Length: 222
Image 1 (cartoon, rainbow, N blue to C red):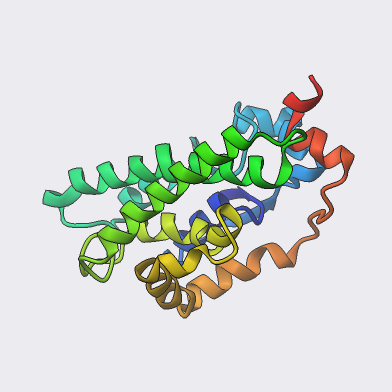
Image 2 (image 1 turned 135 degrees about the vertical axis):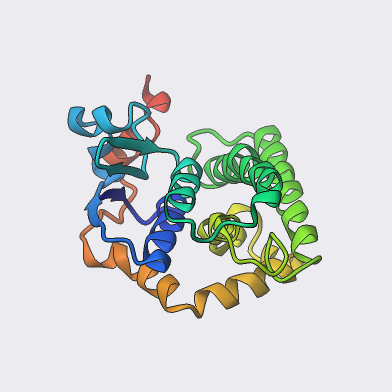
């Protein structure tokens, strides 16, 4: 099993599953600031040119939430009871279609956009906050997203939640005590610590220089 990754939120949540499950995998670093996501070999794995991606025998997968679901169903680990599968899918798609995209756009317009747009920043910060508040309220009803059962939903949140202050405002995490409680619990798990340490074993470019901006945000230069 080959796991294509970097230190971004979406790859890290897959890394957490891999470490929690004990699956044997080979990490394959993809330095997106150096443009490796655009190389033909990687585009054959993920035509969308993003990480993470996973190759498991004949199965080639991309999109972090699809990978989490695939691995959960493959192993039978970190999934709810069969009767609750529909609820899990609803929340997983909510994270995939709302939390991640709005958080990412909030980061882009708040920190990296070539031209500042008050309207865009207000919209995406509002929507990011709204989506995170829905997760906060859900976690106020139980220990995990699915009550007392630790699932791939919690892993999906874990990838993004450490960046809440960067996504919105410097003190944003103070508004989400239930999410911070979950993060503290997951961060204490040995598997989470191994997942967090994984990118540090490889050399990724840290500087967001002009070349990195062109690789990460080519539409700016089109």
